[in-house]
Image 1: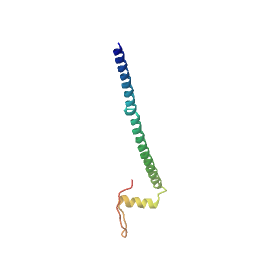
Image 2: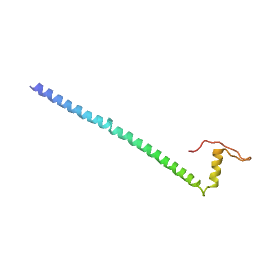
Image 3: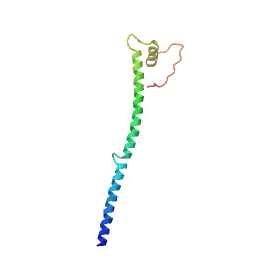
Image 4: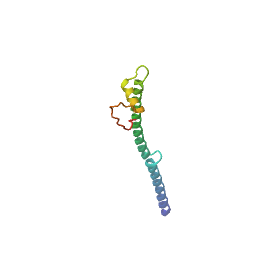
Length: 102
């Protein structure tokens, strides 16, 4: 009888240890575990930085569009765009070709 009680106690302890191990493992490595939370927080930081960059680009482009509206065309901006897109240059000017900023 003592042997059966000891065996029962051993398997009960083993079962509960396996259950606790299962819960702990999935708490850390599961689909919604701590590791997944860490990855998502890094992804969120990266996407927020990208969003900030895109917002700054949009503000810059809106400013350029505002300068080119009818009745308020900035002569310097118009000259810059004509030279960039049409390849216009005067006789005594040196043309330096560089990749666009945006």
